[in-house]
Amino acid sequence: MSHQAALTGPFEAQRPRLLRLAYRMLGSRAESEDIVQEAWLRWQAADRSTIAEPAAYLSRIVTRLCLDALKSARARRETYIGPWLPEPVAEPPEEEPRADELTLTLMLALERLSPLERAAFLLHDVFEVPLGEVAATLERDPAAVRQLASRARRHVREARPRYQVGREEGERLARAFFDASSKGDVQSLSALLAEDAVLHSDGGGKVIAFHNPITGLARILRLYAGLSRKYSPEQIVLLRPLRIDGLPGYLSRERDGILQTTAFDIRDGRIAAIYITRNPDKLARLVDEVGV
Image 1 (cartoon, rainbow, N blue to C red):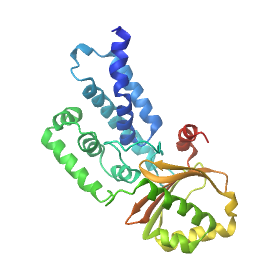
Image 2: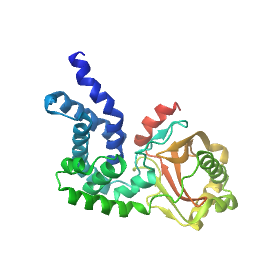
Image 3: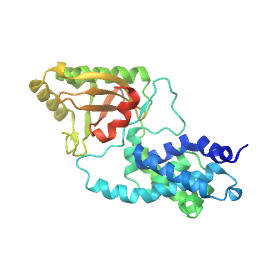
Image 4: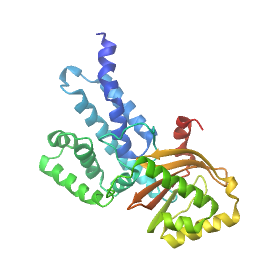
């Protein structure tokens, strides 16, 4: 084996996993790619004769880089205009969920954790890294890491759906929501939404979006009824059904010509949360990937 192959082979084998770990830590694909690129530079410079487990070594580097990045990321989010949502990632329809899959809902629950709690939960509970290795990565005692993961687990437990929504059922509800919302069909929307449904809209100050979540069935119905009175439903185009961060949804071109993704958290057969991403910076990569 050539020196270059010995260098790149182990790293490339881990790259997809490292990208998933960084994305789940940061919620940004661009930042995740920067983190993994930095890990590659450190891997090149490392004395690999001292590295027994490349996977563990690389996970440790990426986690520590993410912990550093979270400090500045959290500062930026304090000044972010309106609700912040993770950059949407669309999954191929035929792809089976991975063991380390997290839905958008769970990623938002992780946002409420401290960086160390988030790292401990992701490494131990999601990526199934042994507790001792997590402790070494976070430079904490195993007992302390166990407590971090336990606290995180309690915080995210409520965000976990009580049952998984099948792909066909999810796509049906997403399409029904698109049809009803574009026409302002309040009766059909009322049948789709939970009484305490919440709508989140991320424009990042770049495009028009709601600066605060819209909470409750009545308010969401009024919103879509009002939009239908101002705009023709022909102005809205469903471009592609998608599964976005594990949730059913779609990519559309809206009344103002802006592209947006819409994803749905479905519980007990009703839409409990609507996640709309309109920030063009967060959609550029997804739009390129789906070919719109």
